[in-house]
Figure: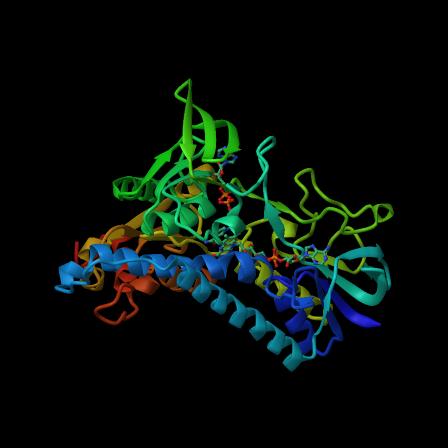
Length: 466
Ligand code: FAD
Ligand code: NAI
Protein backbone atom coordinates (compact mmCIF):
# COMPACT_ATOMS: atom_id res chain seq x y z
CA UNK A 1 0.00 0.00 0.00
CA UNK A 2 1.38 3.38 -1.05
CA UNK A 3 0.63 6.74 0.54
CA UNK A 4 0.67 8.45 -2.86
CA UNK A 5 0.56 7.27 -6.47
CA UNK A 6 1.39 9.96 -9.01
CA UNK A 7 0.21 9.40 -12.60
CA UNK A 8 2.57 11.20 -14.99
CA UNK A 9 6.25 12.08 -14.54
CA UNK A 10 6.28 15.55 -16.13
CA UNK A 11 7.27 18.70 -14.20
CA UNK A 12 4.00 18.43 -12.27
CA UNK A 13 4.18 14.72 -11.44
CA UNK A 14 7.90 14.21 -10.83
CA UNK A 15 8.16 17.28 -8.59
CA UNK A 16 5.05 16.19 -6.64
CA UNK A 17 6.55 12.69 -6.22
CA UNK A 18 9.90 14.02 -4.96
CA UNK A 19 8.22 16.38 -2.48
CA UNK A 20 5.89 13.61 -1.23
CA UNK A 21 8.89 11.32 -0.63
CA UNK A 22 10.81 14.13 1.12
CA UNK A 23 7.82 14.48 3.45
CA UNK A 24 8.06 10.80 4.37
CA UNK A 25 5.22 9.50 2.20
CA UNK A 26 5.67 6.16 0.40
CA UNK A 27 5.39 7.24 -3.23
CA UNK A 28 5.19 5.66 -6.68
CA UNK A 29 5.23 7.59 -9.97
CA UNK A 30 3.82 5.95 -13.11
CA UNK A 31 4.45 7.16 -16.67
CA UNK A 32 3.66 5.60 -20.05
CA UNK A 33 6.58 7.21 -21.96
CA UNK A 34 9.14 4.47 -22.53
CA UNK A 35 12.92 4.50 -22.91
CA UNK A 36 15.09 1.39 -22.71
CA UNK A 37 12.26 -0.59 -21.11
CA UNK A 38 11.80 1.92 -18.28
CA UNK A 39 9.65 5.04 -17.80
CA UNK A 40 11.23 8.05 -19.54
CA UNK A 41 10.90 10.72 -16.87
CA UNK A 42 10.30 14.45 -17.39
CA UNK A 43 7.07 14.43 -19.43
CA UNK A 44 6.47 16.82 -22.30
CA UNK A 45 8.70 19.50 -20.80
CA UNK A 46 11.95 17.56 -20.70
CA UNK A 47 11.42 15.18 -23.60
CA UNK A 48 9.63 17.17 -26.30
CA UNK A 49 8.93 20.64 -24.90
CA UNK A 50 10.75 23.27 -22.86
CA UNK A 51 14.23 21.74 -22.81
CA UNK A 52 14.71 20.53 -26.42
CA UNK A 53 13.11 23.71 -27.81
CA UNK A 54 15.43 25.91 -25.74
CA UNK A 55 18.45 23.81 -26.79
CA UNK A 56 17.65 24.41 -30.47
CA UNK A 57 16.81 28.08 -29.83
CA UNK A 58 20.28 28.46 -28.28
CA UNK A 59 22.04 26.76 -31.21
CA UNK A 60 20.12 28.75 -33.80
CA UNK A 61 20.81 31.99 -31.92
CA UNK A 62 24.55 31.29 -32.08
CA UNK A 63 24.28 30.78 -35.83
CA UNK A 64 22.31 33.98 -36.39
CA UNK A 65 24.65 36.01 -34.19
CA UNK A 66 27.70 34.65 -36.00
CA UNK A 67 26.06 35.49 -39.33
CA UNK A 68 24.73 38.96 -38.50
CA UNK A 69 26.62 40.34 -35.49
CA UNK A 70 30.17 39.01 -35.45
CA UNK A 71 31.30 41.39 -38.21
CA UNK A 72 30.21 44.33 -36.00
CA UNK A 73 32.77 43.14 -33.43
CA UNK A 74 35.48 42.88 -36.07
CA UNK A 75 35.30 39.09 -36.11
CA UNK A 76 35.18 37.34 -39.45
CA UNK A 77 34.22 33.73 -39.79
CA UNK A 78 34.46 33.01 -43.49
CA UNK A 79 31.78 30.81 -45.01
CA UNK A 80 29.55 29.22 -42.35
CA UNK A 81 27.62 25.99 -42.51
CA UNK A 82 25.24 24.07 -40.27
CA UNK A 83 25.58 20.42 -39.33
CA UNK A 84 22.00 19.80 -38.19
CA UNK A 85 22.81 16.25 -37.06
CA UNK A 86 25.35 17.63 -34.57
CA UNK A 87 22.87 20.27 -33.40
CA UNK A 88 20.17 17.62 -32.87
CA UNK A 89 22.65 15.35 -31.09
CA UNK A 90 23.56 18.14 -28.65
CA UNK A 91 19.83 18.72 -28.00
CA UNK A 92 19.30 15.01 -27.31
CA UNK A 93 22.29 14.82 -24.96
CA UNK A 94 20.85 17.69 -22.92
CA UNK A 95 17.44 15.94 -22.80
CA UNK A 96 19.00 12.60 -21.80
CA UNK A 97 21.14 14.18 -19.08
CA UNK A 98 18.05 15.86 -17.64
CA UNK A 99 15.81 12.79 -17.70
CA UNK A 100 18.47 10.61 -16.09
CA UNK A 101 18.93 13.39 -13.51
CA UNK A 102 15.31 12.87 -12.48
CA UNK A 103 15.86 9.10 -12.24
CA UNK A 104 18.76 9.92 -9.88
CA UNK A 105 16.54 12.24 -7.80
CA UNK A 106 13.89 9.49 -7.58
CA UNK A 107 16.47 7.01 -6.28
CA UNK A 108 17.93 9.57 -3.86
CA UNK A 109 14.52 10.39 -2.39
CA UNK A 110 13.13 6.87 -2.52
CA UNK A 111 10.42 7.41 -5.18
CA UNK A 112 9.48 4.20 -7.02
CA UNK A 113 9.15 4.57 -10.78
CA UNK A 114 6.90 2.41 -12.94
CA UNK A 115 6.35 2.22 -16.69
CA UNK A 116 2.77 1.83 -17.89
CA UNK A 117 -0.56 3.42 -18.69
CA UNK A 118 -2.55 4.08 -15.53
CA UNK A 119 -6.28 4.32 -14.86
CA UNK A 120 -8.00 4.95 -11.54
CA UNK A 121 -10.20 1.95 -10.76
CA UNK A 122 -11.61 3.09 -7.42
CA UNK A 123 -11.38 6.12 -5.14
CA UNK A 124 -12.32 6.86 -1.54
CA UNK A 125 -10.68 6.23 1.85
CA UNK A 126 -8.26 4.14 -0.18
CA UNK A 127 -7.84 4.18 -3.96
CA UNK A 128 -6.72 1.65 -6.54
CA UNK A 129 -5.06 2.11 -9.91
CA UNK A 130 -4.77 -0.31 -12.81
CA UNK A 131 -1.46 -0.22 -14.65
CA UNK A 132 -1.00 -2.62 -17.56
CA UNK A 133 -2.92 -5.45 -15.86
CA UNK A 134 -1.48 -4.80 -12.37
CA UNK A 135 -3.27 -3.16 -9.45
CA UNK A 136 -1.75 -0.57 -7.13
CA UNK A 137 -3.37 0.28 -3.78
CA UNK A 138 -2.78 3.79 -2.48
CA UNK A 139 -4.20 6.29 -0.01
CA UNK A 140 -3.96 9.23 -2.43
CA UNK A 141 -3.70 9.76 -6.20
CA UNK A 142 -2.22 12.75 -8.00
CA UNK A 143 -3.20 12.96 -11.68
CA UNK A 144 -0.46 14.79 -13.63
CA UNK A 145 -1.04 13.42 -17.13
CA UNK A 146 -0.36 16.69 -18.97
CA UNK A 147 -1.54 17.55 -22.46
CA UNK A 148 -1.06 16.68 -26.15
CA UNK A 149 -0.98 18.78 -29.32
CA UNK A 150 -4.44 19.79 -30.55
CA UNK A 151 -5.31 18.65 -34.06
CA UNK A 152 -7.44 20.48 -36.62
CA UNK A 153 -10.27 18.36 -37.98
CA UNK A 154 -9.43 17.02 -41.42
CA UNK A 155 -5.71 17.82 -41.10
CA UNK A 156 -3.98 14.74 -39.66
CA UNK A 157 -0.31 14.81 -38.68
CA UNK A 158 1.95 12.93 -41.08
CA UNK A 159 5.47 13.11 -42.44
CA UNK A 160 5.24 16.70 -43.69
CA UNK A 161 2.39 18.07 -41.55
CA UNK A 162 3.81 17.86 -38.05
CA UNK A 163 3.15 18.87 -34.44
CA UNK A 164 5.73 20.48 -32.14
CA UNK A 165 7.39 17.11 -31.45
CA UNK A 166 7.91 16.50 -35.18
CA UNK A 167 9.16 20.06 -35.67
CA UNK A 168 11.83 19.62 -32.99
CA UNK A 169 13.16 16.56 -34.81
CA UNK A 170 13.56 17.82 -38.41
CA UNK A 171 16.60 16.19 -40.01
CA UNK A 172 16.86 18.85 -42.73
CA UNK A 173 16.21 22.58 -42.65
CA UNK A 174 13.00 23.19 -44.63
CA UNK A 175 13.40 25.83 -47.30
CA UNK A 176 9.81 26.97 -47.00
CA UNK A 177 8.06 26.37 -43.69
CA UNK A 178 4.42 27.09 -42.89
CA UNK A 179 3.15 27.31 -39.30
CA UNK A 180 -0.52 27.30 -38.35
CA UNK A 181 -0.86 29.18 -35.03
CA UNK A 182 1.15 32.31 -34.17
CA UNK A 183 1.07 31.47 -30.45
CA UNK A 184 3.93 30.56 -28.14
CA UNK A 185 4.95 27.33 -29.90
CA UNK A 186 4.58 28.83 -33.39
CA UNK A 187 6.81 31.76 -32.45
CA UNK A 188 9.48 29.72 -30.66
CA UNK A 189 9.74 26.91 -33.24
CA UNK A 190 9.42 29.46 -36.05
CA UNK A 191 12.37 31.36 -34.52
CA UNK A 192 14.54 28.22 -34.55
CA UNK A 193 13.99 27.38 -38.22
CA UNK A 194 13.95 31.03 -39.39
CA UNK A 195 17.37 31.61 -37.80
CA UNK A 196 18.70 28.47 -39.45
CA UNK A 197 17.59 29.70 -42.87
CA UNK A 198 13.97 28.64 -43.46
CA UNK A 199 11.56 31.06 -45.06
CA UNK A 200 8.78 30.94 -42.43
CA UNK A 201 5.12 31.97 -42.75
CA UNK A 202 2.98 32.04 -39.61
CA UNK A 203 -0.81 31.98 -40.02
CA UNK A 204 -3.24 32.77 -37.24
CA UNK A 205 -7.01 32.76 -37.33
CA UNK A 206 -7.25 35.69 -34.90
CA UNK A 207 -6.74 39.28 -36.08
CA UNK A 208 -4.89 40.16 -32.83
CA UNK A 209 -1.29 39.12 -32.17
CA UNK A 210 -0.51 37.55 -28.75
CA UNK A 211 -3.85 38.60 -27.27
CA UNK A 212 -2.96 37.45 -23.73
CA UNK A 213 0.04 39.78 -23.42
CA UNK A 214 -0.25 43.47 -22.55
CA UNK A 215 -1.33 45.25 -25.74
CA UNK A 216 1.69 47.55 -25.93
CA UNK A 217 3.99 44.51 -25.66
CA UNK A 218 2.16 42.58 -28.40
CA UNK A 219 2.24 45.67 -30.62
CA UNK A 220 5.99 46.17 -30.09
CA UNK A 221 6.67 42.44 -30.62
CA UNK A 222 4.75 42.40 -33.91
CA UNK A 223 6.56 45.57 -35.08
CA UNK A 224 9.98 44.04 -34.28
CA UNK A 225 9.21 40.58 -35.72
CA UNK A 226 7.81 42.07 -38.93
CA UNK A 227 11.17 43.82 -39.45
CA UNK A 228 13.18 40.61 -38.95
CA UNK A 229 14.02 38.89 -42.19
CA UNK A 230 12.91 35.33 -42.83
CA UNK A 231 9.35 35.38 -41.59
CA UNK A 232 5.92 36.65 -42.35
CA UNK A 233 3.12 36.82 -39.80
CA UNK A 234 -0.32 36.67 -41.42
CA UNK A 235 -3.08 37.39 -38.93
CA UNK A 236 -6.83 36.92 -39.45
CA UNK A 237 -6.09 34.05 -41.80
CA UNK A 238 -8.49 31.12 -41.65
CA UNK A 239 -7.12 27.77 -42.68
CA UNK A 240 -9.35 25.88 -45.13
CA UNK A 241 -7.29 22.77 -45.86
CA UNK A 242 -3.79 21.30 -45.90
CA UNK A 243 -2.77 18.25 -47.91
CA UNK A 244 0.50 16.35 -48.01
CA UNK A 245 1.91 15.77 -51.53
CA UNK A 246 5.16 14.18 -52.62
CA UNK A 247 6.80 17.59 -53.09
CA UNK A 248 5.38 19.32 -49.99
CA UNK A 249 2.17 20.50 -48.36
CA UNK A 250 -0.55 22.38 -50.25
CA UNK A 251 -2.26 24.84 -47.90
CA UNK A 252 -5.51 26.66 -48.66
CA UNK A 253 -6.59 29.56 -46.49
CA UNK A 254 -8.90 32.54 -46.49
CA UNK A 255 -7.30 35.97 -46.20
CA UNK A 256 -9.17 39.27 -46.55
CA UNK A 257 -12.21 37.38 -47.87
CA UNK A 258 -10.20 35.68 -50.63
CA UNK A 259 -9.17 32.05 -50.93
CA UNK A 260 -5.39 31.72 -51.34
CA UNK A 261 -3.24 28.64 -51.92
CA UNK A 262 0.43 28.20 -51.04
CA UNK A 263 2.90 25.34 -51.00
CA UNK A 264 5.34 24.58 -48.18
CA UNK A 265 8.04 21.97 -47.72
CA UNK A 266 6.77 21.35 -44.18
CA UNK A 267 3.78 22.56 -42.16
CA UNK A 268 3.78 22.80 -38.35
CA UNK A 269 0.36 22.84 -36.68
CA UNK A 270 0.60 24.58 -33.28
CA UNK A 271 -2.95 25.58 -32.36
CA UNK A 272 -2.94 24.80 -28.65
CA UNK A 273 -2.89 21.65 -26.55
CA UNK A 274 -5.63 19.37 -25.20
CA UNK A 275 -5.59 17.83 -21.71
CA UNK A 276 -4.80 14.11 -21.35
CA UNK A 277 -7.89 13.24 -19.33
CA UNK A 278 -9.46 10.56 -21.52
CA UNK A 279 -9.92 7.24 -19.75
CA UNK A 280 -7.99 8.42 -16.68
CA UNK A 281 -10.68 7.09 -14.33
CA UNK A 282 -13.22 4.26 -14.63
CA UNK A 283 -16.45 5.81 -16.03
CA UNK A 284 -18.46 4.58 -13.00
CA UNK A 285 -16.45 6.97 -10.79
CA UNK A 286 -17.89 10.03 -12.62
CA UNK A 287 -14.72 12.10 -12.29
CA UNK A 288 -15.78 15.70 -12.99
CA UNK A 289 -14.21 16.81 -16.29
CA UNK A 290 -15.24 20.07 -18.00
CA UNK A 291 -16.42 20.43 -21.60
CA UNK A 292 -12.85 21.19 -22.82
CA UNK A 293 -11.47 18.05 -21.16
CA UNK A 294 -9.81 19.68 -18.12
CA UNK A 295 -10.25 17.86 -14.81
CA UNK A 296 -12.27 20.13 -12.51
CA UNK A 297 -10.30 21.07 -9.37
CA UNK A 298 -10.67 23.47 -6.43
CA UNK A 299 -7.98 25.95 -5.31
CA UNK A 300 -6.09 23.09 -3.61
CA UNK A 301 -6.22 20.94 -6.77
CA UNK A 302 -8.76 18.52 -5.26
CA UNK A 303 -10.92 16.74 -7.85
CA UNK A 304 -14.51 15.57 -7.41
CA UNK A 305 -13.15 12.20 -6.15
CA UNK A 306 -12.10 11.77 -2.51
CA UNK A 307 -8.29 11.70 -2.10
CA UNK A 308 -7.70 12.29 -5.82
CA UNK A 309 -5.90 15.48 -6.94
CA UNK A 310 -5.08 16.84 -10.41
CA UNK A 311 -2.22 19.22 -11.25
CA UNK A 312 -0.48 20.79 -14.25
CA UNK A 313 -1.77 20.99 -17.83
CA UNK A 314 -4.57 18.45 -17.24
CA UNK A 315 -6.06 20.62 -14.47
CA UNK A 316 -6.50 23.81 -16.53
CA UNK A 317 -5.02 27.29 -16.02
CA UNK A 318 -1.66 28.26 -17.53
CA UNK A 319 -0.08 25.36 -19.43
CA UNK A 320 3.39 25.99 -18.05
CA UNK A 321 6.00 23.74 -16.45
CA UNK A 322 6.61 25.96 -13.41
CA UNK A 323 2.86 26.20 -12.73
CA UNK A 324 2.62 22.39 -12.83
CA UNK A 325 5.59 22.01 -10.44
CA UNK A 326 4.23 24.61 -8.03
CA UNK A 327 0.90 22.78 -7.86
CA UNK A 328 2.81 19.51 -7.34
CA UNK A 329 4.56 20.91 -4.26
CA UNK A 330 1.31 22.38 -2.92
CA UNK A 331 -0.55 19.06 -3.23
CA UNK A 332 2.33 17.05 -1.69
CA UNK A 333 2.39 19.38 1.30
CA UNK A 334 -1.34 19.35 1.74
CA UNK A 335 -1.40 15.51 1.65
CA UNK A 336 1.31 15.60 4.34
CA UNK A 337 -0.95 17.75 6.51
CA UNK A 338 -0.01 21.39 5.98
CA UNK A 339 -2.17 24.03 4.27
CA UNK A 340 -0.03 25.64 1.59
CA UNK A 341 -1.50 28.05 -0.95
CA UNK A 342 -0.47 28.69 -4.52
CA UNK A 343 -1.24 32.10 -6.00
CA UNK A 344 -2.03 31.57 -9.70
CA UNK A 345 -1.79 35.33 -10.31
CA UNK A 346 1.96 35.16 -9.65
CA UNK A 347 2.78 32.66 -12.43
CA UNK A 348 5.20 34.36 -14.86
CA UNK A 349 4.85 33.92 -18.63
CA UNK A 350 7.85 33.88 -20.94
CA UNK A 351 8.17 33.64 -24.72
CA UNK A 352 11.71 32.80 -25.83
CA UNK A 353 11.82 34.84 -29.02
CA UNK A 354 14.39 37.49 -29.91
CA UNK A 355 13.76 39.78 -28.14
CA UNK A 356 12.27 37.75 -25.30
CA UNK A 357 8.86 38.58 -23.88
CA UNK A 358 7.94 38.08 -20.21
CA UNK A 359 5.25 39.26 -17.87
CA UNK A 360 3.63 38.74 -14.50
CA UNK A 361 0.44 40.12 -13.00
CA UNK A 362 -2.21 42.20 -14.70
CA UNK A 363 -2.23 43.83 -18.11
CA UNK A 364 -3.56 47.36 -18.70
CA UNK A 365 -6.74 46.03 -20.28
CA UNK A 366 -7.41 43.75 -17.28
CA UNK A 367 -6.98 46.71 -14.90
CA UNK A 368 -9.31 48.87 -17.00
CA UNK A 369 -11.90 46.08 -17.05
CA UNK A 370 -11.67 45.73 -13.26
CA UNK A 371 -11.96 49.50 -12.81
CA UNK A 372 -8.62 49.76 -10.98
CA UNK A 373 -6.83 53.11 -11.26
CA UNK A 374 -3.15 52.70 -12.12
CA UNK A 375 0.02 54.55 -13.10
CA UNK A 376 2.50 53.45 -15.74
CA UNK A 377 6.29 53.56 -15.67
CA UNK A 378 8.10 52.61 -18.86
CA UNK A 379 11.79 52.49 -19.71
CA UNK A 380 13.36 51.59 -23.07
CA UNK A 381 16.36 49.23 -23.36
CA UNK A 382 17.84 51.73 -25.85
CA UNK A 383 18.68 53.88 -22.79
CA UNK A 384 20.30 50.99 -20.88
CA UNK A 385 24.09 50.72 -21.11
CA UNK A 386 24.32 46.94 -20.83
CA UNK A 387 21.67 46.40 -23.53
CA UNK A 388 23.71 48.58 -25.88
CA UNK A 389 26.94 46.76 -24.98
CA UNK A 390 25.43 43.37 -25.81
CA UNK A 391 23.92 44.76 -29.01
CA UNK A 392 20.34 44.04 -28.00
CA UNK A 393 18.66 47.33 -27.17
CA UNK A 394 15.15 46.79 -28.54
CA UNK A 395 12.05 46.79 -26.38
CA UNK A 396 11.18 48.15 -22.94
CA UNK A 397 10.11 47.44 -19.37
CA UNK A 398 6.62 48.54 -18.37
CA UNK A 399 5.37 48.65 -14.79
CA UNK A 400 1.80 49.11 -13.67
CA UNK A 401 1.24 50.34 -10.11
CA UNK A 402 -1.99 51.02 -8.24
CA UNK A 403 -2.66 54.77 -8.31
CA UNK A 404 -3.56 55.12 -4.59
CA UNK A 405 -1.12 52.74 -2.95
CA UNK A 406 1.72 52.49 -5.52
CA UNK A 407 1.55 48.67 -5.13
CA UNK A 408 2.85 46.90 -8.24
CA UNK A 409 0.09 45.11 -10.13
CA UNK A 410 1.84 44.01 -13.33
CA UNK A 411 5.28 44.03 -14.94
CA UNK A 412 5.69 43.52 -18.69
CA UNK A 413 9.02 43.18 -20.46
CA UNK A 414 10.06 42.85 -24.08
CA UNK A 415 13.81 42.86 -24.44
CA UNK A 416 17.07 41.00 -23.81
CA UNK A 417 17.00 38.37 -21.03
CA UNK A 418 13.38 39.19 -20.18
CA UNK A 419 13.10 35.56 -19.01
CA UNK A 420 15.66 36.21 -16.26
CA UNK A 421 14.62 39.79 -15.45
CA UNK A 422 11.02 38.80 -14.73
CA UNK A 423 12.01 37.00 -11.51
CA UNK A 424 12.65 40.32 -9.75
CA UNK A 425 9.15 41.38 -10.76
CA UNK A 426 7.60 38.11 -9.51
CA UNK A 427 9.34 38.53 -6.17
CA UNK A 428 8.21 42.15 -5.96
CA UNK A 429 4.57 41.23 -6.62
CA UNK A 430 4.77 38.28 -4.20
CA UNK A 431 5.93 40.60 -1.41
CA UNK A 432 3.44 43.36 -2.37
CA UNK A 433 6.27 45.76 -3.24
CA UNK A 434 5.55 49.28 -4.46
CA UNK A 435 7.26 50.92 -7.42
CA UNK A 436 9.05 53.05 -4.82
CA UNK A 437 10.51 49.89 -3.20
CA UNK A 438 12.16 48.90 -6.49
CA UNK A 439 13.16 52.50 -7.18
CA UNK A 440 14.94 52.62 -3.78
CA UNK A 441 16.84 49.37 -4.42
CA UNK A 442 20.43 49.55 -5.71
CA UNK A 443 20.89 47.63 -8.96
CA UNK A 444 24.43 46.85 -10.13
CA UNK A 445 25.79 48.82 -13.08
CA UNK A 446 25.89 48.11 -15.94
CA UNK A 447 23.11 45.50 -15.91
CA UNK A 448 19.87 44.96 -17.77
CA UNK A 449 18.11 44.97 -14.39
CA UNK A 450 18.71 48.72 -14.16
CA UNK A 451 15.91 49.02 -16.73
CA UNK A 452 13.52 47.61 -14.11
CA UNK A 453 14.61 50.17 -11.55
CA UNK A 454 14.27 52.98 -14.11
CA UNK A 455 10.77 51.79 -15.08
CA UNK A 456 9.87 51.77 -11.36
CA UNK A 457 11.17 55.34 -11.00
CA UNK A 458 9.23 56.32 -14.13
CA UNK A 459 5.95 55.45 -12.36
CA UNK A 460 6.41 58.69 -10.38
CA UNK A 461 8.21 60.53 -13.22
CA UNK A 462 11.61 60.13 -11.53
CA UNK A 463 13.50 58.09 -14.15
CA UNK A 464 17.09 59.30 -14.46
CA UNK A 465 18.09 58.23 -17.95
CA UNK A 466 15.08 59.30 -20.09
P1 FAD B 1 3.48 16.66 -18.99
O1 FAD B 1 4.80 17.29 -18.98
O2 FAD B 1 2.73 16.63 -20.28
O3 FAD B 1 3.67 15.17 -18.45
C1 FAD B 1 2.63 14.25 -18.40
C2 FAD B 1 3.19 12.85 -18.49
O4 FAD B 1 2.14 11.92 -18.18
C3 FAD B 1 3.67 12.48 -19.88
O5 FAD B 1 4.96 11.91 -19.82
C4 FAD B 1 2.64 11.46 -20.39
O6 FAD B 1 3.20 10.52 -21.29
C5 FAD B 1 2.20 10.82 -19.07
N1 FAD B 1 0.86 10.22 -19.12
C6 FAD B 1 -0.27 10.72 -19.72
N2 FAD B 1 -1.33 9.89 -19.48
C7 FAD B 1 -0.86 8.86 -18.74
C8 FAD B 1 -1.45 7.69 -18.18
N3 FAD B 1 -2.76 7.45 -18.30
N4 FAD B 1 -0.66 6.84 -17.49
C9 FAD B 1 0.67 7.07 -17.33
N5 FAD B 1 1.27 8.16 -17.81
C10 FAD B 1 0.53 9.05 -18.50
N6 FAD B 1 6.40 25.42 -20.49
C11 FAD B 1 7.18 26.30 -19.84
O7 FAD B 1 6.90 26.63 -18.69
N7 FAD B 1 8.30 26.83 -20.43
C12 FAD B 1 8.67 26.50 -21.70
O8 FAD B 1 9.68 26.99 -22.20
C13 FAD B 1 7.85 25.58 -22.41
N8 FAD B 1 8.18 25.20 -23.67
C14 FAD B 1 7.41 24.28 -24.33
C15 FAD B 1 7.76 23.94 -25.62
C16 FAD B 1 7.00 23.02 -26.33
C17 FAD B 1 7.39 22.65 -27.74
C18 FAD B 1 5.87 22.43 -25.69
C19 FAD B 1 5.05 21.40 -26.43
C20 FAD B 1 5.51 22.77 -24.40
C21 FAD B 1 6.27 23.72 -23.71
N9 FAD B 1 5.93 24.13 -22.41
C22 FAD B 1 6.70 25.05 -21.76
C23 FAD B 1 4.74 23.59 -21.72
C24 FAD B 1 5.18 22.49 -20.73
O9 FAD B 1 5.88 21.48 -21.42
C25 FAD B 1 3.95 21.91 -20.03
O10 FAD B 1 3.19 22.95 -19.45
C26 FAD B 1 4.38 20.94 -18.94
O11 FAD B 1 5.15 19.89 -19.47
C27 FAD B 1 3.15 20.37 -18.23
O12 FAD B 1 3.58 19.50 -17.23
P2 FAD B 1 2.67 18.33 -16.70
O13 FAD B 1 3.46 17.66 -15.62
O14 FAD B 1 1.32 18.83 -16.39
O15 FAD B 1 2.48 17.31 -17.94
P1 NAI C 1 -1.24 29.00 -28.02
O1 NAI C 1 -2.57 29.00 -27.38
O2 NAI C 1 -0.15 29.80 -27.44
O3 NAI C 1 -1.38 29.49 -29.54
C1 NAI C 1 -2.21 28.86 -30.46
C2 NAI C 1 -2.52 29.85 -31.57
O4 NAI C 1 -3.19 29.13 -32.61
C3 NAI C 1 -3.45 30.98 -31.13
O5 NAI C 1 -2.86 32.22 -31.47
C4 NAI C 1 -4.74 30.72 -31.89
O6 NAI C 1 -5.40 31.91 -32.29
C5 NAI C 1 -4.23 29.95 -33.11
N1 NAI C 1 -5.22 29.05 -33.71
C6 NAI C 1 -6.06 28.20 -33.08
N2 NAI C 1 -6.79 27.51 -33.99
C7 NAI C 1 -6.39 27.93 -35.22
C8 NAI C 1 -6.75 27.59 -36.55
N3 NAI C 1 -7.66 26.67 -36.81
N4 NAI C 1 -6.14 28.23 -37.57
C9 NAI C 1 -5.19 29.17 -37.31
N5 NAI C 1 -4.81 29.54 -36.07
C10 NAI C 1 -5.40 28.92 -35.05
O7 NAI C 1 -0.86 27.45 -28.14
P2 NAI C 1 0.50 26.76 -28.58
O8 NAI C 1 1.39 27.74 -29.24
O9 NAI C 1 0.11 25.53 -29.31
O10 NAI C 1 1.13 26.35 -27.19
C11 NAI C 1 0.42 25.48 -26.29
C12 NAI C 1 0.81 25.75 -24.86
O11 NAI C 1 2.14 25.36 -24.61
C13 NAI C 1 0.70 27.23 -24.52
O12 NAI C 1 -0.49 27.42 -23.82
C14 NAI C 1 1.87 27.51 -23.67
O13 NAI C 1 1.44 27.75 -22.36
C15 NAI C 1 2.73 26.25 -23.69
N6 NAI C 1 4.07 26.63 -24.14
C16 NAI C 1 4.81 27.48 -23.36
C17 NAI C 1 6.03 27.93 -23.77
C18 NAI C 1 6.76 28.88 -22.91
O14 NAI C 1 6.42 29.01 -21.74
N7 NAI C 1 7.77 29.56 -23.39
C19 NAI C 1 6.62 27.49 -25.02
C20 NAI C 1 5.76 26.62 -25.79
C21 NAI C 1 4.54 26.20 -25.33
